Amino acid sequence: MTETMDGTAASDRITENWLKLARGAAIAMVVWAIVTHITARVIIPPVLVIGLIFAAFIPFLRDGRRRVALGLAVFSFLALAGNVPALVDELTHLSSAPAFILTLLSLLGAVTAIVGGIGAFRSRSEPPTRRVVSVAAAVFVVLAATSIGVAANTDSDVAQAGDVEILAEKVKFNPEDITVSVGGGIWIDNKDGIRHTFTIEGEGVDLEIPALKAKRLDLDLAAGTYDVICGVPGHENMTGTLVVEN
Image (cartoon, rainbow, N blue to C red; front, side):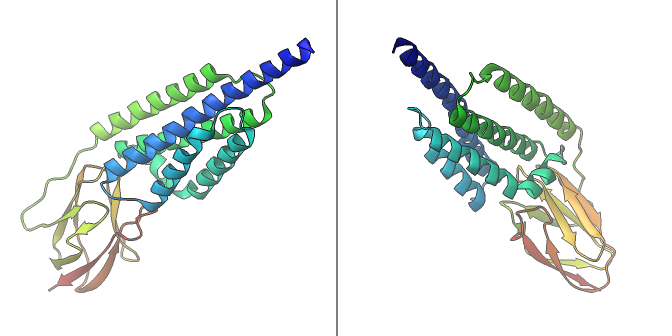
């Protein structure tokens, strides 16, 4: 009887340790959602939903609730899988440090939640919490520092006389209706902590604007009206109209 009780106690302790790891990862994902909204300065529905669901898991990741932990792991996997294009896009643009760092945090948080959730459900051995946290922290610090360094060495362009000035702010072009003379230039100041593009599909115009930087472009377009978009995944509502006049 004593051996059985000791074995049960050990199993419960192992489960609780895995649940602590999963809970910490869920908290990290809530922090990611909050800071992402502060950085973007606009509500991003998918991020809001993901953050709220992770927050809902947190109080229940205790008291041996293995199925809840498995649910967290499944949700984390689905959240990652459903956002692969956006994750890859942001992680290949180190010059937009705020967005890169937040995306990295979400990736590490979700992966840790998967590991912790599955570990709590199986509860076969003690979680390598220190190792997981140390590796995740080291990866985060090194890559975040690299991104900050790249961003610091990415210069903003200076507006030239006659340029039409546009703000990229709160995931919108301001103004959305832009008028430029043939052969004229545009200067776009990105006030957001996330990157944007000024893209006219089919016309060879695809200006990359890193977070918190300004870029300019000389337009080589015939007179006419063109649809402008931001080509960053998830920014489909960031559109405008460009009128080129003689």
